Image (cartoon, chains in turn red, purple):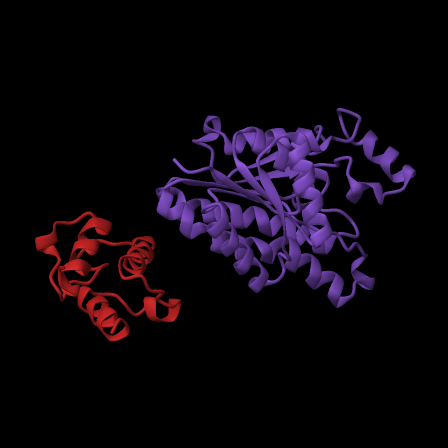
Length: 78
Length: 245
């Protein structure tokens, strides 16, 4: 099974239509990967599905970079 | 391919009932809502008689928890609705100088705040599917105004604004949001009017009669159909000519 990092990056690449190698951990969805606000909501929805969890809106709004997404999943999925 | 699901609020009678049947005839499995269990059962029976797939469910559109739980159970039982018809509405008419707080707030809550609750609950599924249709049933009164209906007119005009804003917001995901604004339609809501009032109304309508619920449902069915794929953010007036924008 792939690592959480790999799975998150794969979903980010799919959802935002960017190449996986461009998805660095420090990348911001909006500033670096060209996401709009609707894209970021859909991205969170895709993460929820992949990791079979529910991310509350207050938390979802804080997930603005690839690293923050990985951190959230790691912290909440143990 | 799973069944196509449509959610129609306020489907126990009048315009909502006609819409539910018309959408069912397009091949949708329809969930029609009523405010009581008895109403929901009557909807289920009516769908069966009309030969369309679907059920009635009890829903209070002014209660967020009720909206959440009904949408959740639709998702579990049938799948995510790709069509949402916000039809449920009430009137509590009074002149402004006599209007009570509950008359104002109840009408705004049931007619307008319900759009926020239901659309939000259904948008996830539509966004994921990259396809959806939302139709909000407003009123000619939202455009023209009507003495004694400041609460209703405000709510209905608010719905039209909501329609345009949401249409812009989610158009990129293949979801259209439109409105249908009925004029005076022959339903329980307009039966409250006296004969004198009804006669006076007819004189203001070029087609010289009240409309039928089916004449609203036909336009809603059009907006749901592929023929209307390029229509969004629009409110279509269906009023026998009494108001022309």
